[in-house]
Length: 530
Ligand SMILES: [Zn+2]
Image 1: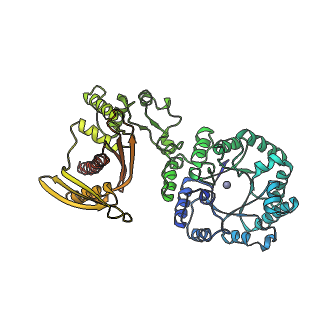
Image 2: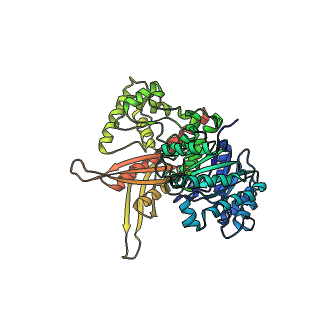
Image 3: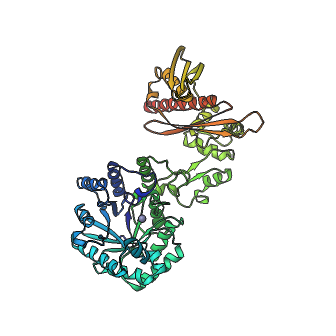
């Protein structure tokens, strides 16, 4: 039996985060993923607060969840009303979820200044709201808002609010660090006091990240007998966020040995972390523990050779357990073992004594001196290895391009146009295209010229374009490095170009991007045949 219950509030508390917005359809898709992951409770929203949440709960009635239970969230009744006349409490019941969570005030300052009622009246409000809901729902949770801050200034009153809530026999009292200002030591001290005052009651934790301690606070709370853990995917939430379930779940399961999910479920956590960002159109944080692209990446040559011999030397867990992978980065620190392990991943068979390895190493060092960087440009790196192995095919030859930028008047937007001439298998193609900027025009013209020969380029798109000005080393003027990220329906790849001329640097990265796509398609065809 599970000893700890996981309560996800990505869809409610998470959407309080700046720039994190989800449509009703997004919320339904995320609910399904959370259900697959093995989350016990999914808080879908606050039906009393907005029509979108009402619609979500309505839609969810037609969806079946395998094991997770849906929760609706709301506040204790309005002080001017009684519980049975409160529209907000009614909306919670109308959402028809198996779980209802309501929050109430535990901090005397909030009761007096925000709610503007007497301390006793607040106790009544808490008790009445929960008592009215109790017979109408199968699981009832009480979020004690600002509990830790309230306890710090008036512990007797904070405890009195919990005791008032207990009269209605809720299934769990959730202690909230709403302002995220409590450190683990204090948090543990308060939890111990609560457990002593009201023994035998199921307690939960809801922690915000304003001191960057939310995950630590949750772990400490669990070590001190808390049985319900609240949090969000990727830690989205008000201000600095809520406690991050993508770190909490592996911490509890892999470090504390608490069985929450199956191994298979836990290995989905990286995918879900990316999925949620993808739907919210937010770039995935590569430095995120456990699930970030850098979480198991190795750059230094000595680290790499040690990790290759024994991953435990620089990895705290096996990345596969959280669905992540080990990455060996290419950089000027690249030692021989970086090249070897990269080559292996790309299916290239090299031995460390192979002169090709030395050749790639010396080319790499030379290119990095010029300002190339292959960390975000694995596509360019793979092409470089292929060239060193004499495998790189040229898919087209450039006979020339011209790019024009024309601004007709002060209040007119500039117009960019590119003409290009390329040769493919003896045939010359000459074409032109416009674009919103010179690089875009050049990209459009190049694709237009090549699509006749390589129709597969139609399904490829540029995802991101980054320019970095590199400081000048030799007084010849600054160089720019262009990083392009391209994608098709199957994968993403980065390519790089460096020059004193931004168009030339962009051109190099574009050519690599297209060549990489064509190379990939060629490999696929070969594999299909064999
Ligand atoms: Zn919160």
